[in-house]
Amino acid sequence: MNATVEIRALTKRFGRTTVLDHADLRVGPGVTGLLGPNGAGKTTLLRCLATTLAPDGGRITALGLDPARREQRTELRRRLGYLPQDPGFYPHFTVFELLDYVAILKELTDRARRHREVRRVLAEVDLTGRAHAKVRTLSGGMRQRLALAQALLSDPELLVLDEPTVGLDPEQRMRFRALVSRLGEDRTVLLSTHQTEDVAALCDHVVVMAGGGVVFDGTPRELAGVAAGKVWICDAQPGGGARPGGAVLRWRTADGRHRVVGERPAGAVPAEPAIEDGYLLLLGARAEAVA
Amino acid sequence: MSAVWHPPADLVRRYTAGRLDPVQVMSVEAHIARCGPCRAAVPYEEEWLTAAWERIEDVVDRPRPGPGTRLLVRAGVPEHTARLLSATPSLTRAWLVAVSAVLAFAVAAARVTSGDPDVLLAFLVTAPVLPVAGIAVAYGRGVDPAYELHAATPMAGARLFLLRAVAVLSVAFGLTGAATLLLPGPLGLSAAWLLPALTLGLALLALSGRMPPLLAGSLLTTGWFAVVLVCDGALHDRFLPFHPASQPLYGGAVLALLVLVRLRHRRLTLGERL
Image (tube, rainbow over all chains, first blue to last red; front, side, top):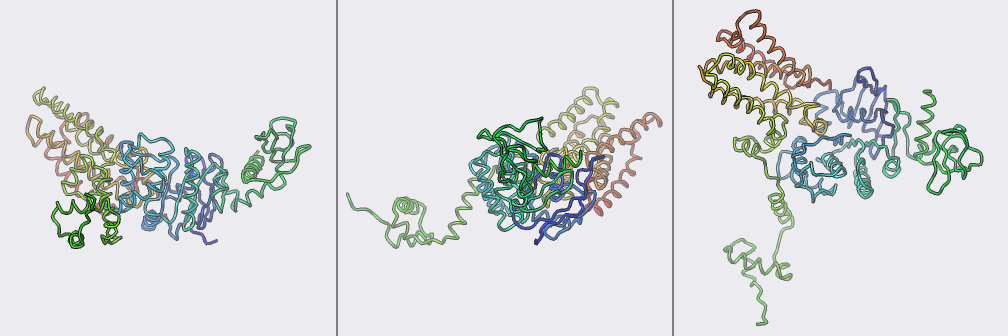
């Protein structure tokens, strides 16, 4: 793989808590999804990559640049678009003013060119009609689209998106997928998400993080393949406690049957594994190993 | 009358060449807006038309700058820099009102008490802290709501911090200077806060290469109050930090700090090892 982002032994501690523990990652052009439970280190890794947080150890190379060096860090920031998990806004600004402000921070000093760019990204996220609304009047979904719009300013080569689909309704989520899919055709997009459907719909590469490290790195098909032969469907509820018979997880499906990920319950038939199954199995196996 | 008038070719030619008077232009445009064939007959350059529409759109769509931005632009600050400064947390209306209120209270108290030395001392001790507090909350994690949003942009860090610091210093010095002129008593004594304020402001910029501005500001403010208390308690001279004899010390410190900040301004990391 022709890597545009290469992370080696990345380590970050907050006090006594090690959030990233020698994490290794290689990301190439296209859309890469970062999956993992809360506290896995996804956001910390993305913040280090987006140059808003300094790692305690390890090395990052992005677009051939080393953010630990001041000049190269500034150059990387010129070619980077970042959507933070918790983007703060100036509530008294209008949508247009906020994007105009970020465009200036991205060194677009010529007013006509800057405003053209602001209108372009507003159209991309379907916020043109709200350009002059105050940020404080926007709904959660609109704020998320605004945060995405600022990341798209200057047409960056590397997009780092931390949970970009949070707060989006189903229609907006579809539009978002279409946009990111198009953006991923000619650049590198790294996004974190809790939604395995986003990964299935968007990503050609998926990374699973847990406990501050990378526990899986491959294609969505390979992630689903982790659960091959370990996904079952049965008509009756498997007996026993909460997770009987070695099941990592089981739940009742919409058609009243029971889906089990793990060891085969009595009377169950095999089912086609999905990304979610592989993900759950990975995390379940890890939890058992820790226990 | 059923005959339909169309502008003759010569009129259209003069219209496209921009050689008609405004009344004739209105007449031709009123017609071509309704008449497809005449509209198609008017030659146009697509690139020019797109650019013209963009210029019009920009005028219609452009956000109206706030009073602060307009003031800065009138003062000669470039438009994009003025827009950047408009987001400085310590230049918001609430902050400016708070600082003005503190200064107005100090001036009123000094006038009511006819220049009571204790009131003047309170003003002199507080005045240098105002710019320090302003700079400390001008930039950084925890004080700027949009910090995470713009921390990944090329302007983030030292460039934006110094820009905002200069703006805050100018405003704080302007407001405090105006208050100084309104105080009763000799101007030399009332203005004795000036060099201590500059010293503390520059010390904050220098320290910001080692720690976050908010922490640096807190340490400097605490240190400043400690110096005043020591002068009062141990040396029995409350006005010692403001004596004319003390001013050369501040002057020397200002010069040294200016050199230090100039040499290190590119390395300001604001307490973050990046």
